[in-house]
Image (cartoon, rainbow, N blue to C red; front, side, top):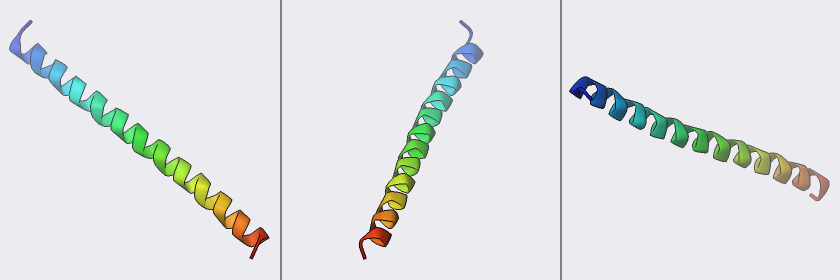
Length: 47
């Protein structure tokens, strides 16, 4: 494997890790927004 192929593999690995982290962040944000909506609904029902 040439050095440029190794470099590409490393870049791909790094990008895949970044993507996985971004997807986790997105899922956490989505869950947080759901919790917020539920809390707001509960607060409106029980002031």
